[in-house]
Length: 508
Image (cartoon, rainbow, N blue to C red; front, side, top):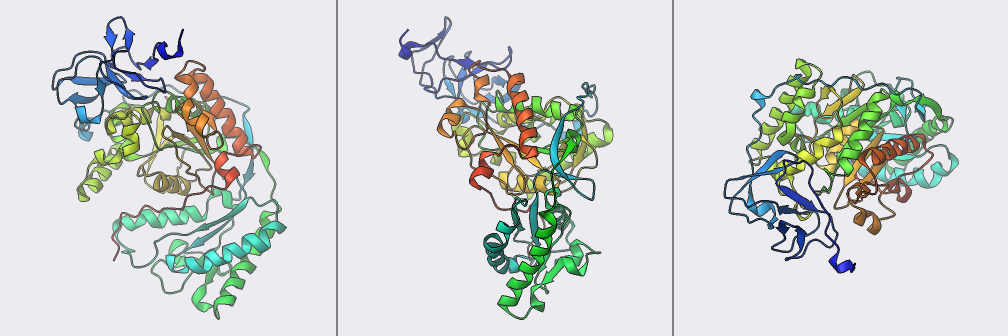
């Protein structure tokens, strides 16, 4: 058969859906007969939706067996349904949501799975062996950046067992309402970033000396040898030399560390998505969800996040909370963020990007339904606020903003040591502090970015692989990455995004 006349490939997620998503990279041309009773009446791009029925204005448009919107005009069968033809549904009222009513039974445990990690004195386990240097205020960043370049050039080559250097630079610390109620978010985030498992239990803080966020406010019992105050130093060269001297003391200790066999229960894995498209909820995120269930069965800690990408599907997960207390905490975090957005005169609809829409996501509801599936099927055992550390193992909801950079920083503060990141449109995002595994929702993106994407979930859409097969591939790859036996592409190229603190408190 002529390739120009191949039957187009489409996917319907649930039998009750009244739309299908175009899989074929070339899209569907007007006049194409898709089924005996369905012909495209206009050109429809890849990853976008085709109407399976005639819609009247106000009719429900259903995907994932859920209402993603209401037709705001008549939409003939065979039409392209894009964001302009839908009215956004009202978000689920939080007070009416059932909690802990459908708690999943624990899946059978998986025994014997291990990785090679770096055990720390506090009981955590790292996946990297890094020198971390934390700043207490943005004012010192210029000096620290110069010292960092010197450390990389003059010191790091002498300590080959150290994976890298991470300065925790940020825009916080002074000129801020340090005692405002929500200042607890950036402060605890910085505290937890400074003690990240990949820093080997070593602590070094560079302060100025007159800032509001003095090092002792971060760590009331901090030892003098863990702090360098630049206002106490005699000029530029002394500042640089002091930082280099202290850094080398730590590098000597870090260089002696070796990886040891650790149970997978010591992993803390973060799940995130960015540059999402309509395939994300069909391929990449379900496969990640399958891998998440495998990790939970091994006793690991697995965090999923992004409040605005959960809010419109929160009614699907509150019944999965392990008890009423956890369920109420989930609702409280949603309510806090609703108020936060209201204060900024926006709502959760502001989440969707132009790229999301170009990728076939009509609105935040459709995006949310596809995002949630990466959480798998396990019970949610704990809900934590931005930058908090979990106290339990299992599936955790870590309430963070959806911004890739802010969510990533919050997950790092929560102790995340490997991140699994799905993308459909494509992003080069990476974190120096922890490896980021890129999972593509489309084979087309992998073909374009062979040296940036780690796992191809697009094989699911074309029927070459199943969700379970790709999920197992992700799980196996996580263990290899955590063990240091393989590198993600972002680490191979040295791609890293800046730390970006979430600060909902006032700036003075």
